[in-house]
Image (cartoon, rainbow, N blue to C red; front, side, top):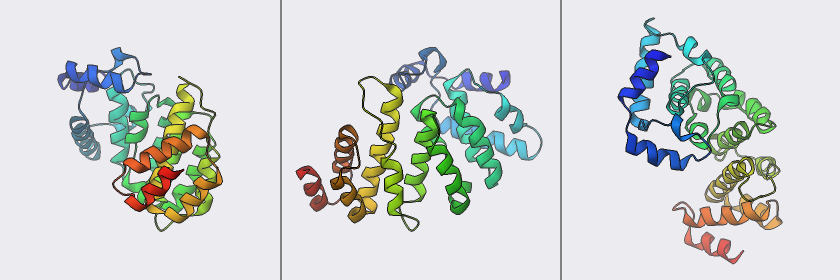
Length: 235
C-alpha cells in the first residue's frame, strides 16, 4: 500500500483536490489528494498487467480495506473493472461495496464482465437493492439503469426501484444519494422506455422529491424528445 500511495502522490494536483473535495462533501477533504480520473485508469491498467505476469498482487490490494485515500478507492474501482472473470468481479465488488462511502466511487465501479453476464448479474442486483448500506443500494440501481433498460427491461424493474424511494429530509445524505440515483434511473427510463415509465410517473409511484428531480433530469436530457418534455413539464 505504501508503494501505491507513493505512486498516487506523484500524480497529485492540489488545486484539483480542492475542486474534487467540493463534489464529495461527505468525504474528509484531507483524504483527497487530487489525482485525475484518466491517470487513475491508466495506473489501474498498468497494475492489472503487472498482476498477470506476477509483478503485482491484486489480491493483497483488494484485501487492504478500508483505504486511507479517496483516490485509493477510485483505483480500487478501476482495478475491479479490469477483471475479466465474472465471479471474481462480483466477489470483489461485494467485498468492496461496504467500504464505499461516496457517490463518485460508487458510480465509477463498473466492468464489462458484468455486461456480458447479465442473467447471472441480476440475482446480485436484487440482493444489493435490499441492502441497508446507501452506496450498495445506489450501485444496484445503477446496474439496473446501465444494463436492464433495453432488451432486458421489465416493468417490474420500475416498481422495484420506485419502492426504494426514501422520505426526503433536508441534509439527510443517505436519503439524498439513494433518491438522486432513483431519479437518474427514471429519467433514463423515460428516454428508453417512455410508455411504461410515463405511466408509472403519472401513477404516483415516486415521492414528490424524486418525481420532481426525475422530471428535471429528463427535461435536461438530449435523449428525451421535445414532445415528451412538454408532457413532463405539464406534470
